[in-house]
Length: 219
View: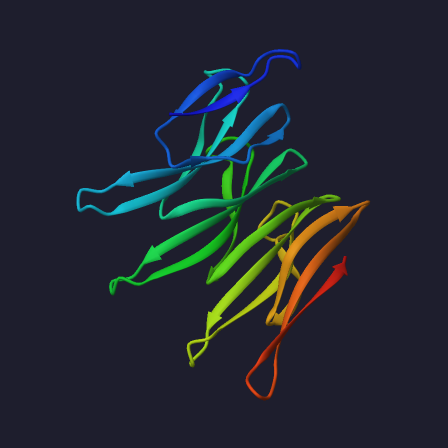
């Protein structure tokens, strides 16, 4: 059984608040307006022997009764990023869909939550082969990276990142800059109102070899 621990005071021993149950994973809590939010990954063993997973957002106010699920995103989902700004929770949600031929497609989305199921909604779907990462509060916004990986005709893959921003609305969730093919964002940090990024660039040489360089960007 996984449990959420809490300390009543700095000198107190850690004390269990509530059992979450037999889930696959519960981790990476963040706080917002006195409430702690955390992602949970549920595992379901199907009758045909297959296993499916579903991501859910949970919250806790430090009491057993106040530790509860906010929203389950359904089979084939998981929460891959979590942040908050101006009283709202931002979530990166991964969605895996299976085609009739048995192949799978992964697409990631940005959601926002006010701590209620009804108030947890999708802001943007970034399409197949995408990954949402580095949700970073900055000023009135949350900035983040969206990396898209595509398979080329020769079987190789190409990844590219874009820096996005969101003000918590679908219309206000938009790209700031697409860094182009073979350029990916590897880290993001905000400092004194400026966003810094570490960026990986892969250069393909004429002889078929590649060279990798890293750079620092700011915004």
